[in-house]
Image: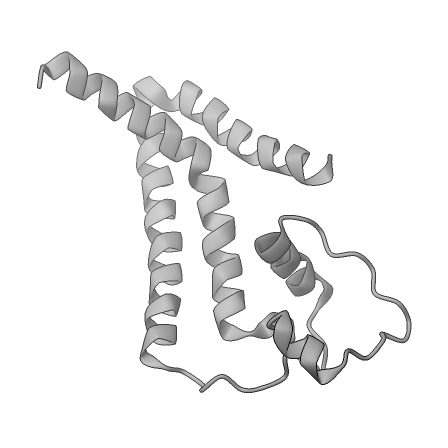
Length: 143
């Protein structure tokens, strides 16, 4: 490949990565919450922010306020939509791998942002890409 092509590919990779970094940070963190099952706690119920993050991760929308007395689902309906109260085996090897993946993705994204924003010649455009990477999903969530 030509050096100019590689340089162009690096720049595209840089700006796309900076733009997507906020989403990667969000979804790796919310995925960690999903793997740990914090959103499914019944007693005590999860904190509001945990429910909000889980709702965005699972359904790409903020959760709707629940009624004062939630209606009971029949047992068959609980299992049909995957929402049940059963323990799914504790920390299995795959669950441990998923946790390590979420932590690794979060950490390497932070390192990548540090490197990207530390490059003086590209800092201004990187900050614009980062800002858009924060604003665009928030706007899409509330629209």
